[in-house]
Amino acid sequence: MPNAFSHIPVPKFTANQLALAEVCAIELWNGFDYQTGKECDISDEDLLVMFAVPTFAMYRSIRTRQIITELDMRELIRAAQLKALFRSTQATDFQGAIAAYRATALAVYSGWRKKKLKLANVYDYATQAILAWSVKFVNNSKVSLNGNHRVPLACRILFFAMPDMMVFNFSNGLAKQMRFQSRPQAAIPVFNKYLYEGLQLNKALLRNLGMPKPTTLPEDIWIKANNGDWWQRRVLDLALLLHFGLVSATPQLQTKGRQLAARWPTIKAKP
Image 1 (cartoon, rainbow, N blue to C red):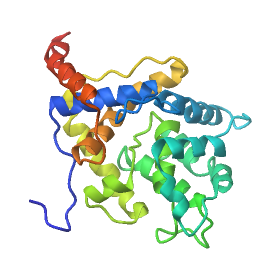
Image 2: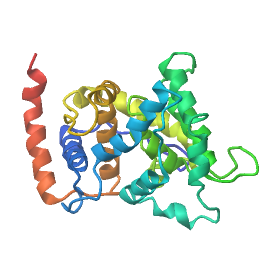
Image 3: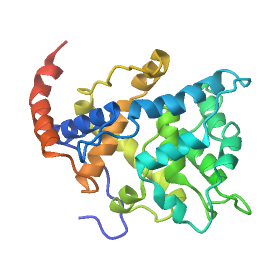
Image 4: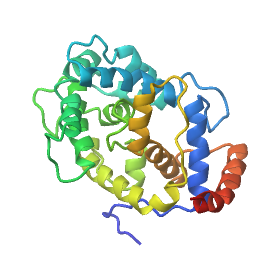
């Protein structure tokens, strides 16, 4: 048993657990709430379009007029239920973050894509991008790990904006269950390390997962996301939320998950 000060690693999930997480991910991709079965205001594919399309445009051309907007961010906050951001004593500076996007998160992404930025681990690029950008959402007197950050928001946006980079969905609830630092900016480097290790630990079963084909997302971005294991990271995130009891799936999806898991040995056996 871990002591009170040790982190809890990502477990090795069973086929049933990952299959349930995948059917939940499919619901979100199609724009349905896996906890209620009701239609969502926005789907995961919609979020990829909202954030990845302008990001890829900015990466390819500094003259593009496409940008991530405050309206987009507020849509994501509602979809991801990040309303606690607005209970902070310091207001969230959306326009400041938008203005800083190119020089912070996008600069890290560009350095990674062009192999000009050399970091020790593949997940370190996401950590650096998140920390560099999340602090710009608040008017801090100086930039430091002790300053105010918006890690959950910045992380969630970058998960959809840069689907080919090794970004994992950080949430305060999940960080608490896994016994990470209470300050998200201090927790995120270890969080990303543990989630990456969990991705490798569950790799054999995660190979059974196939990212849904796009309907509105441009094909080139979909290919980048698919090659970057975006779908596997999405499913892993949901598997953890379900595992720790932070969310639950409808009984219908639980049945569907078991049926999917039963087919996986056959799927895995195919050449």
